[in-house]
Image (tube, rainbow, N blue to C red; front, side):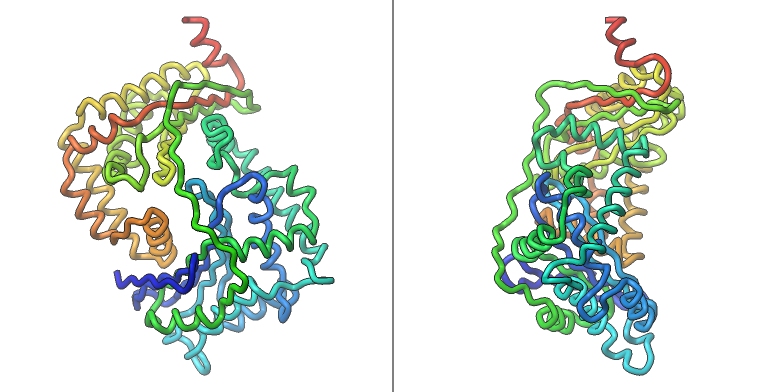
Length: 433
């Protein structure tokens, strides 16, 4: 991986990955800020409003027409949670210059210039955002939040995180809060936009065939962050498990959703976390994992059972769809499988297929510009850079003892049960006790 990182100014960096493997190139600018309930709604709304129009191209239709003129470029934005941070991204996918015609030699510069206009030169009315644009995008954002709430799987995970991290930044939804969004007006949103530009840590990423120096020069010319008030981001705090908390809610669904939140005992800042991906492959995230083969296939205790880690925060969320009457058995079996890993009950076959599964994943990261970008961003945030190939080689050298050592630091923190129609698993467990 031909990777280079250059500091432009305090809190402003450009990361370039030069490769001629793709016909398209991707340029992304990420704004990273502390995740806060007070600001999350505003920062999530800002990119949606910015994409509505620029000073030169004041409507979505005109921006779309300009993108089509530039060989069908695509413009994306997102707001996601990364540890205790909110990462707001603007991306533009463009045809690589060598495949363009005519004035295509500067198509990369035109693309980055257009993205710069979207970010720095928004369409305004009376010095603030258009009221019509703000109202329209508020509705779209609220619809997105409600869609997540209506998806029982994602809703249950969100509720588990809220209970597990009450009062902690990690509990905040990066899409914001509906009650706050409803009250946002154009003037206030514009003031948060100015704060957004001033205070965020900025990480730009380019994946394409252009040389490092050219992208660095274009970025420095097109992205002028004047009057910056940047402070270094606080280190992500790990929440250590103290006691197991349980909570439940009812749902208008046949299937129950059980979500278990675990403290990993370390974060991606720690050397111990290097073994985390291999543990995840053995325990949960591969077709031959203990949860899949035992809890789901052999015992049929759930319809699905999968763990998703957040290494930067040091947390593992295991979610499963179950019949209500299987609540106690499914929970006990998941914990039993974790204990098996802790005690070293890992076969050579399990290790072989876990490593093979991870190796396949790492080897395919370089097959997509966006997966390369995501990989590099995660390395930048954790402060530990290595290539996918280097990580794959490191994993192949690990033994079962390393996996068990990592697993022994994991503790259950929270169990959330979204109860479907029927008898409550939690009530059943209490009655038996």
